[in-house]
Structure formats: structure tokens, C-alpha cells
Amino acid sequence: MSKRQVDSLPATPVWLRDFLFGNEEDLGMTGANIVSFAKHIGLDGDDTATRCQAFGIVEDQYDTTAAARMIEVPFVAHYRTTGKHLDYRRFVADFASWPPIANRVAYLKAERAKAST
Image (cartoon, rainbow, N blue to C red; front, side, top):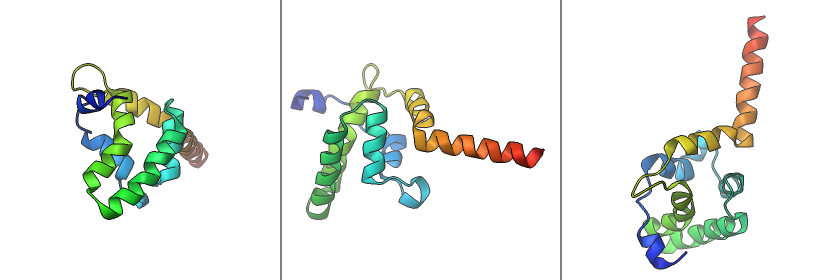
């Protein structure tokens, strides 16, 4: 992706930033989970893993905004529609079908069904 393409991408919306960098206790997001989700939506897992490792290094010594943007750019590009908009519904569908979430939803539904019988 050229610098010009990156510069023309919209800012990362709060919902995506919260997903990627939210409190691990709330979302359970780790570098491994970010890579897993990236692979699930068709992004390059190796590239995402490298970006996550670089984020840890850069975040400790430099600007955290720039470090975060290294991880955010592929996701922003993936969910970009036209202009400066990102497809939130597509993200929600991808998130709901991501195996850790889909499995948890299935488990909770089974527990609810068992409790109601």
C-alpha cells in the first residue's frame, strides 16, 4: 500500500479502535486475537503479526498514535466503502462469525435452552 493510499484512508472510528485496543478484560483482545480476526476477514496474518510486534516496540518509545495506526490501517482499508466511510455492519457480521464469538454465542444459546426446559 503506497503512502498516498494510506494518507487517503479515513480516520479510525471509535468502534474499530475500541475493538483493537480495548481493555483485554472486556474484549479479550491480544496480539494473537487480532491476528486471528485479521485472518478470519482475509487479511495477511503474518503482516498483522508483524504490525502487532512493531506496535509493542514503537508504543514503548515513540508516539502511540502512530504505533496504533500501523495496526489500524489494514482494517480501515478492509472496511472502507466509498469516500471516508467504513462499513460498520460488515464489521459486526465478521465479528459475529469469528469462531471465538460464534462459539460463545452458540454456547450461551444452548445454556439458555437447557435452563428453559
